[in-house]
Image (cartoon, rainbow, N blue to C red; front, side, top):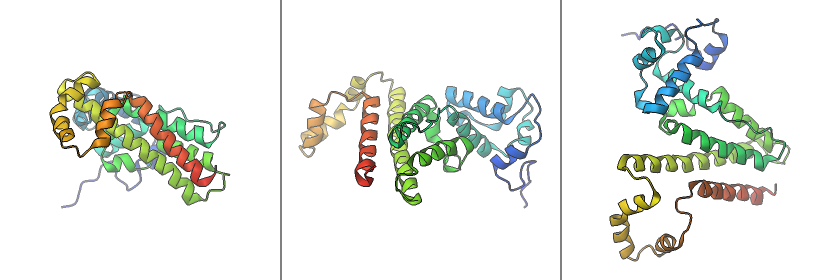
Length: 243
């Protein structure tokens, strides 16, 4: 059975359709769809996003949004691009390292404001979008003129981004666990996990971990942990390429 095509389904990408679309009705725009969806996700999580719920929140007919998006997949792409516009891009005048550091720190702050970003499906998370590419463009430009070839510049940018995404995804996971368990502090987390940790430490198979548990003073300082890991990444780039 042939799939029924929506009004937007001409094979063009979402961003191409946005660029060439006619002046939208004042009551409904791509911006309104994205901002409304973000408000819902911020308050209730990504699972709350449905086309019907979105229409209700915007006060429109259930099918009205299909003049602008082909379905929920497009909405998720719009949401990701919409919030990435919150990141103030470094102008690069302070050098490549400061530029990448600023982008990394502001990306972390963005994800902590909108933790549903860590739950976007791959298509929405990985599809290029205007506001995400602005960050990549600025980062690549900051590395230009340093003697690195194009492949190496992109590898550096992607490596830093991989660190940021991995670190902040872990941070969001801890926050979700704490919310789910009703834990408010790091001490409550450790108390809640004590049965497992106590047993494992008694095996004496993890002396380095036990030493950390007994002596570490920044167990709950996530901002410091992120910044320190990022410094290690940037130091590695500096050392390897002499820049």
